[in-house]
Amino acid sequence: MSWTRKVRCHVAGTRAAVRQAREHQRNYAANKNRLKAEWRAARRAGELPENPGPPPSGFTLLPWLLMGMGAFSNLFQDQTPNPWIGGLGLLTFNSLYIYVAFHAFDKERREARSTGVALALLAAVTCGLAAGYGGNWLLFFPLLGLATGAALRLSHLRPASTAVAVLAGAVSCFHDGWGGLDIAYATWISTMVTAAIMRLSEAVRELRAAREELARRAVEKERLRFSRDLHDLLGHTMSVIVVKSEAARRLADRDLDAALAQITDIESVGRQALTEIREAVTGYRQGSLAMELDRAHSALTAAGITLAVSRSGPPLGPQTEALLGWVVREAVTNVVRHSGADGCEITVSGAGAGAEAGAGAGERVRLTVADDGAGVSAGGGLGGTGLIGLTERLAAAGGSLTAGPRPRGGFAVTAELPLDVDATAVRPAMTESA
Image 1 (cartoon, rainbow, N blue to C red):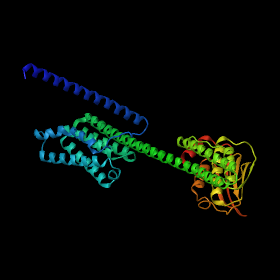
Image 2: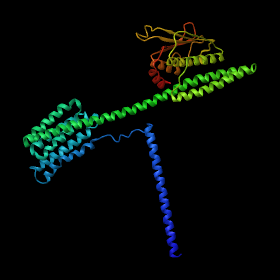
Image 3: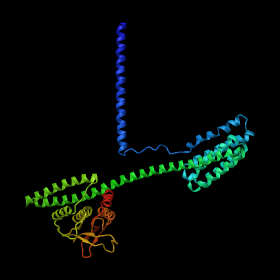
């Protein structure tokens, strides 16, 4: 192969490598931008928790020990009398400071007696070194103030900071005259600023923990809302479908038109259930008492149960109607499933606030669903999941729910609510419980 051909091959290979490298670079940049966009979108949606970083520890206070480098250099330059005593004191001070610093970030260890003893020994060693040597050794007082501010909290901080500052001023003025007041001021400032920063750091950590707990509880409440909504919706819908299917099977042999009408109702109920489940997922489902009464009539008639409805009193607010619609739905579902009744009566009546409602409670509405069946419900009394959920909803809206056997036979569910429930009170209740 000629040298020109070799050069051309080499150039072509280099160009191919360059093109491949550029393609890799473009892919890398595109993937990086896509990941950044997805991360930002997830962050805005609240799917990614804010990373607060590692919790603070004693390492954050260690760099301040560099203030003692002047005293350390005095030891090695033979500018300190009795250097062995000074070196031992310096080692003791650093050891006690590190001990207090690492105990200051844990509440139990900070409040332990050993930490208080170490802080007292640190103050004694600081006074001894500063009084004996002066000069650069006086800078140990601000370090003492820093350790004091980290180890103590508001209840003991003011007297402790004042005592440390007065002690630093007295020893410093003994060596440097009135110039020692600068050391006293620096000691007091380091004590108070350190305590403030430590308290602020703790408050930020507590707020972040509280926000995470609130988010976790909000997720749990939303799951509870959806599970209860799904229970109420599917429990009632499946009961109606089963009853109408049985009616269609019975009518198929002798009345085909009536059987087709029942099948048409089954299709309508199924479609309506799909719509309500979608609304339940988004949390915006609002029931209607009149609509639920119509559905109750259809379900009970298909089950061979006679329904009598009686309504009286002033008009109801939309939130009150929605809650009473849930009560009718659940109570009628239990009648169809468990009662074995021949007749059912639904009564809606308005009344003034009684003694139980309390002064200023306003007018209230009472709804009763009573049957003449066996006098039992699912779980007995309020033991059923649906009735328990309704009890919580009505209680959150200022109402009440009672259920139990009737004295003359049968079972009754009674709900009481204000005529016009506040939407701000109902909406959280629906969100939590549905």
